[in-house]
Image (tube, rainbow, N blue to C red):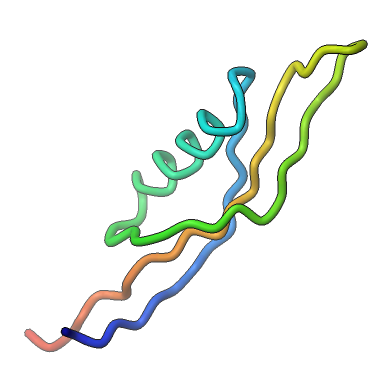
Length: 73
């Protein structure tokens, strides 16, 4: 098994459909500019209320990815 070094960033995804779509949105967007995504951790959940209804979810995550291995250079 290879040793890995990870870096993590914090992102916040939002959705009017629930927590899981908000998480998926955040991970998908992070994957557009980062590679080697490996894990995520939910650190905060918020919501926007209108009256008695939840209108929007915001989920903040730490997303971890492995750093490139420079062994080939």
